[in-house]
Image: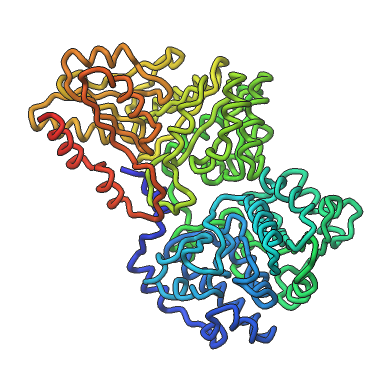
Length: 611
């Protein structure tokens, strides 16, 4: 069964009845009620815009408290969004929202208000930019640092066609640290035509910002934009700074100044992340994203529960005390992998946040490992795909013995931009990498301990996304003896290979087959990057069918390796996993039925194959 906490984080399509009832009690001003499009915004006075700002924040709090979502980034960009719609003419003028986790105010102003005030409509819109929802959105996007590249392309296409309109890219909340953002910034500077970059500087990423780009922004803030050393001006941009980035009147004046510019321009605004909700203003990291009922639960301490996340970081904290070479790395998502401020404080110099820069993160740990350190990168499945080239070129070719922990890998009801099903095909087909899939606490800790101290392989561990399973028995497996299956039961006729998260599903299938008189073999394959060919050959003697169960996309995945190995034999193989497709907030029940991932549906397919 999927980890309940993670499902709550991802499955924003599910709504609690109690929360919906509470949300309906909200009331809004006459100003808010009459604004249903950007045209309505243009009719407002500054005083009315300030009233509107307050109500937009109320609506955002209402939605996030009901079904969860991004909070702090959206609360901080309200006035800037109102000012953009007052000055510019969307959809003729193009707005590109970086990451688009700052897009809630924009959605409210562009005909999607009902999805914030009406709890029954909450699931109708995604948490990110989506042109299928509105002509005012220009891309489906949910990953960071992409806006400048996309906007540069849009602006260049406009120029080629001889058209005239503004292209406005809103970037910030840590996104400038990403490599693609800097690449886009460099290319856009020589566009020689209209492109406006709004840098939303809220002095934060998800966690506090670090790095040279943010040192540069601080100098500009401290000098009210007058510093001689100005990264934007040195690249050739016109540059404007506004300290009062939450002052709608001053924002309007500045946007009117740069509207219809004929050269690349940066508008640098200093905003307050979480503005209007005191807990979010105070604790910006925690309130970057929130789960449902966070208002009611404010100040309540949740009981500590051991999870796969907590046991890994407990291990690393203790390891750092004994081994000066250990280095734990996060690409700006420390909270999601359990690297909370208290854990980071314990790690001290053994921890670094490289910011939103997954490519650099993999290159960084490769350099660390190559020079004798023991790096451990903690990253989400959805984000590791951004660093494929670095895993191949920097890490694998050089056999840099770094460790990567991939979190949240598996089939989920997530938004289309945050699917976690592609990491197995992506990583397991790179030579030299050892990709491990633990099935319980003891295996996980043993794999992590082996990986950190060995110096022969780049190792990736797919952190289980299930409720914690503990055998209570220390795992003494020698993981340097690669590609060896673990047999939980040796039977006949049917062999079940349950990969990582789906090992427990394999146990359920085995139990049901036993009820039907079939003593099925149950295998934990352990390694995602290789096969135990000797064991697979031995199965031929007394098995008619091998089934593989994997919590990810089948194309290029683990099951296909097994099917390919048996391709010229008489062994039948059934692969169970996800279809190669982009799903978007699709309920787990629907996905399990679609992919035949319930014990009952698997048994039915097994029976059909055995006829």
